[in-house]
Amino acid sequence: MQFRFKAFAAALLGFVCISASASDCPQFSPGGRAPVVVNSKMRAATQEVCYSDFALLHSGVTHGPLWSAEHLTAQGIDDAKNNTRTNRFFVEKRLPRGESAQLADYKKSGYDRGHMSPAGDRASQKGMAESFSLANIVPQDPSNNRRIWSRIEEAVRRLTEDSGEAYVVTGPLFSGSQLQTIGESRVFVPTQLYKVVYLPKRQIAFAVVVENTPTNTYTMKTVRELEAMSGLAFPGIPDGLKDKRIGGLKGV
Image (cartoon, rainbow, N blue to C red; front, side):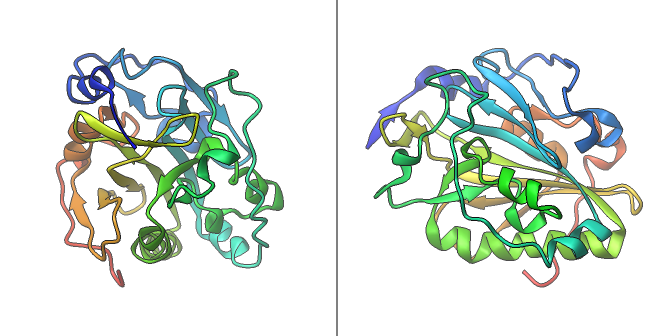
């Protein structure tokens, strides 16, 4: 079904001011400086949720995350290879009633429950279980989730192993004035998905954007370009790196 959400769409396009409130879980962002929503309308009904090895900002408007942040290390990626996937999705009870997606919203929706901070990055059993919180999930095209997006996640893991560590932020983008929703909760379906990757030891930062369709392609963006697209700011990434562009992700 299609619904018009003009106010929210306008907010996505009309970001004007930055509010740099302190993060509740700074350990997952460079310099402890978490992503910032730069428009007050987009900040409505948002709540930061901390987990054992990632954090996210949940929106009670979209009923999903606006960003999900993780600090990856080469050792953590190695440990994650032997972790067992739980596949036990659950409703996040820390969110206000009516603001969370429900398990029933995804049934027969035609969409996968797409992780933002990936299950495949989780180095502990607790972190693995937590990654299946619906607060960390968006409706994702099944082919996209299982093919191109999976390859991008794996490429980021390889970069982390090669670089020693990486700060990664993943989330949805909502473009246009007509946005699709699923379920009785009206969970917003992203039009695109993004990843922002910062490799501090190599002083490289970049963004990847993928259409939420059965595509086999992705687009490389500078961090500055992604900030303009998303209505988010990434204050922990050095300003001098935000306009630098890389050619692509090896192996994707």
